Length: 440
Image (cartoon, rainbow, N blue to C red; front, side, top):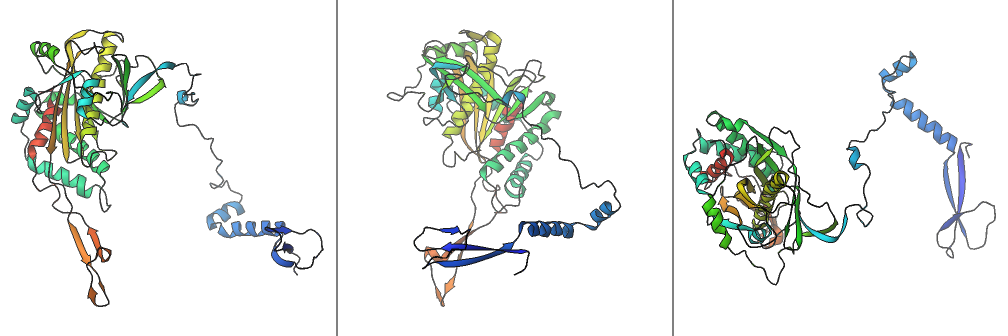
């Protein structure tokens, strides 16, 4: 046996569970030996070193032979944490936390789904639904007179790019093309800056954070999180309803969900900050006023219905207005605003669009009495007919044609005319009117 080899004998017995290594030469009756061969540790080390030498490139061998400073022996840099120092020490979410409260708060974020949809959001925001499913008259008038050269052709090219050429995948997922569609439509709207110079005083913030808090009766409600893409402006939006129309909302009755509580779908937390209001921008920002919030179908919630996304758009648009009002008038203010705060939200799946307008009229949210806030929701806008053609291939077996489902394979392919069927350009006109609002 070579000197570089080592021999190990394993004892295997039916009476023992498993195998064990024998250190002595004792052999017992009814037992078998298993011979296992292997290299000694020093021989294994030599084999590894020889392999490293064989794998070296010619350039590296030359550097080492001439004793030149090798570029291959680069010292490892010290790893530096790529996150903010304030998040290095995680806090405990228990009673030891300084922000722990015995009373729970109800939180709405991008993961919450309001099963009652917009009606539930109307109660939480103390709002009245206006317009009978249409945009305010000023926005409708603006949409009717906005014109863009080759508008229909530009919209078609935008849809084809987002649905056909954005990736080489066989099928583009909803969360991708819905986001890309919003971005490309914003680019088309910015082409109107020649007619409306106010569009140049806008900024985009993707994944921004907003927080707004208020009380509804005995419950404290907070809306916080990162909802979508925000377009902010240097100046606030003008009011949508006159003071007379605002005064008429005092007689409106909010929807009732008895025996369900309107806060049934919200999260409950004991660790929170009182009156947590943050508009998403620090003091001194050149674009401090929220203009339009764009929410797309990032979680495939609305394949069959958009009620969850519409409620989400309403809640986050209201949080934008509430946070700015609380920072302006104080966290404990419960007054009616002389100059309302207006925000917008556009919710889309890339095919279906909903346009939401919010006018904050009051900070007195505890009681259901008094004037209400106003909300306009224009939903059910379908941009085009969305469907993929299906090609069936029937395979033959033993000379017979089988039409059972097990023998039929569905082959999906991209439709070259996708987005061209039943295109409704008026939906883009509404999109354009919401974006131009405030600059006209």
